[in-house]
Length: 267
Image (cartoon, rainbow, N blue to C red):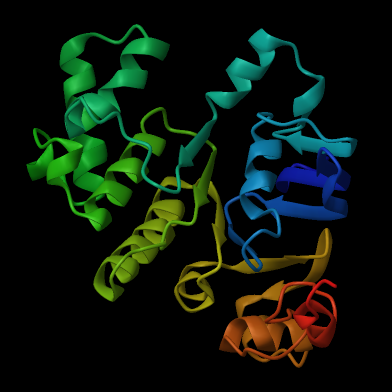
């Protein structure tokens, strides 16, 4: 693994039982960049994040994170490496019975021995970075969808990770909230010198924030390139995905028998 890459994935294969998700995935995540992982629903985008975090194990291939084969680590070494990784979950993933402040302070208390006054200052600093210092005492149920995503981002930043992973950060948000979250991802990545992986099916919002993108389909990377490369690509899959076209390599209809055969009544 080169020092310029924070994640390297080689010949990755994975299945849920008999359902094959990845046949052979190869990709790299350069240090300091915002990299997008895109594809249609069900192509394995979120599964890829779970493989990078070692929540799942591949059936073949390697995943190296910060120079270590993450699936070859023992439990203690894995937990140490995970402390260098932050995660913003698809639905926020906040503890519903804890305030915004306590959600962010939780892992600081669990994973460090910092005094309470320092934890207080750090939590307010993280919240201020996402524009929510004034919401510290709100409960998750009192926050809008966009606020919940921003709290999740502040929590992902809590232990100053080297790598932050975002699972569908724009899903279900209004256009203003989408833009706010996208700008935060870009600005915080550059200001903090971290590396970010953005998993999304929202091409329009994602392309505003990312440097490079991989497209997943049929268990492999089917296209990749810089933001400008992707916008100008003539690749049928990329064009269909970016423009949201109903016809193309991704079929509208799920695999099926001939229509006439399905309409035949049993004898």
